[in-house]
Length: 405
Image (cartoon, rainbow, N blue to C red):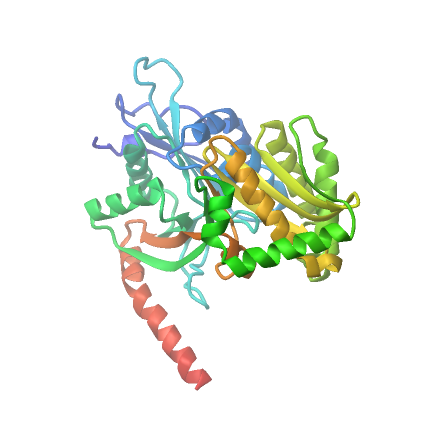
C-alpha cells in the first residue's frame, strides 16, 4: 500500500494525524522518555503478537532502564500505528515499536564520523535490539518506518539497526525491503553466539552435543561434589519468594570474578536496581526462570533466564569459585538443558553470550547470527557515507596491520 507524506508524519502523543488517509499507517515519535510508559499497555499487547520475540524491548524490561541506564542519552520512541480496520472511530492499533537513540557521531568505526545517527537503543544489559513488529501487516509497518526515516524530520543522516538477529522474521523482512527498494546498506558487524534448540529429549541433546569424554568428566565431577555433601538442584517456583532468589543471585555474582573485576550487577546501585526491577517484573508475569545448585544448603551456582513466547534469553550465570574443581557452572547448565526440555512450548534459548564464550559454546551446539546494519536515511550525505564505509573499514584495517608490522 502506498504511503502518503501525511501518513508518515511525525507527531507527539497518541493522537492520529488528521490528514492520514484511511488504512494508511503513520509514525509517532515520542521525544520525552517520561512519556514512553503512556503506551505500555498497547506496547505489551504488541509484544505478545510480534513476528519475533525480544524480551529486552518489552516495556516491563526496557522502561526500568531509562532512569537507571539511559540517563543523559538522547532517546526517542518511534511508534507505528494503523487505523482500526473496521471502525475508523476506534483507537488506532500499535503495530511497531522502535526504541531509538540519537548521537552526534557514527561510532561504527574506531574514531567515528561526525554525522548525526539514529540507532536502535542498546544499553549494556540489552542483548538483542530486534524491534517489535506486529505479525499482521508486518511489511507495511516496516515500510511506514522507512517512509518516516526518508521524510527526515528526525534530522539524522544514518540509521543503525544494531544487534538484530539474522535468523529471524524481522531480518528476512528487512532484507526483502532492501532488495525491493535498492537501498544502500552496510553490515558494520556480524558475529554468532551460542543458541540452544531442544532435541527429542535432554539425554539425546547431551549425547549429540558433548563428546563421551566430556560427559564422563561431568559425571565424575557430579559424583565428587556429592561426596562433599548433600547436592540439590533447585528452581524458583510460581509460589516462591523472588526477592530471596534475586538477593541470592546478586550476592553470589558479587562474590565471583565479576564482583572482583567490577562487572557484577552490584557494582552500581543503578545496575542492581535495574536487575531487581526486571527480575521482579518477569516473576509477576510468569516470565522468570531461576535455578540454583546447592551444596549442604549453600548455593554454589545460580542462573537467571527470561522467557519470551517459544523462546528464552539466558541473562546471566554465576558460581562460587571455591568449588571450581567441580565445575558447578557446567553442572547447573546441564540441569538448565534438562529443565528446558521439560518446559512445554520452549523451543530455543539465546545464550546472550559473547561470541567466543568457551563454556557455553561447548555445551550449546547451535548458533545465532547477530548483525548490525547501517542504512542511509535518504539524504545524499547518508548515501555517500554508506557507500564509503566498506572502503573506510578496509583502510582502517590496512593501516592497523602496517602499524603492527
